[in-house]
Length: 167
Image (cartoon, rainbow, N blue to C red; front, top):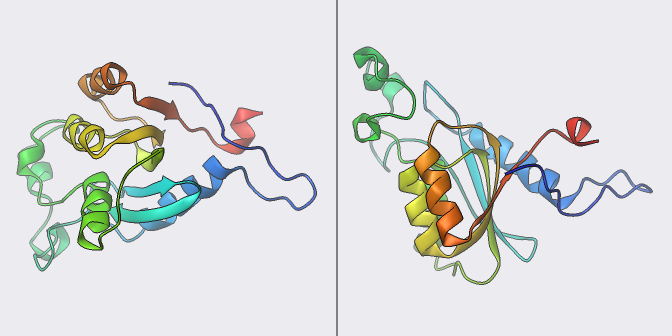
C-alpha cells in the first residue's frame, strides 16, 4: 500500500506518468461532486483507456444535501466512515461502475480504478465483484476492513503520492 508509480515522466516533453495522468483526471472529476463533506472522483481504466468516471452525489433526479438544508449525517454528528446508509450520495466508485453498465462498457481484463480516496468496504465489495484488479487512491479513508477484503481478493491497493513527494 505504498506508492508504486506506473510509467515514468517523459523527460523530453514533460508528460506525466500514467498513474499521475489518471489521478489528475480523477481530481477533476471530483469537482463535479455535490457532497458538502467530501468531493470524491473515480476513473475506471483498462489498457490506458478510460472506461468510465464517477463522482459522489445523490441518485439521478434527486436533490443533493445543499438543496435540502444540509448534510443529514453532519446534522446527526455521524463521524466519517460510519453509518453510510444515512448518506444521500452514491459513492464515486459506485457511480463509475454504474456508468460503465449504463453505457454498455465491459469492465474486464486488467482494470484499474483511480480514486481520490481509498474506497470504503461497500465499494470494495462492488469493485472486487466487478473485476477491478488494481486500485490507486490519493486520500486515506478510515476503513481497515476494506483493505482486508482487497488483500484477500488479491487486488493491488496502491497509495498515490504527489509526484514531488515520490522523488
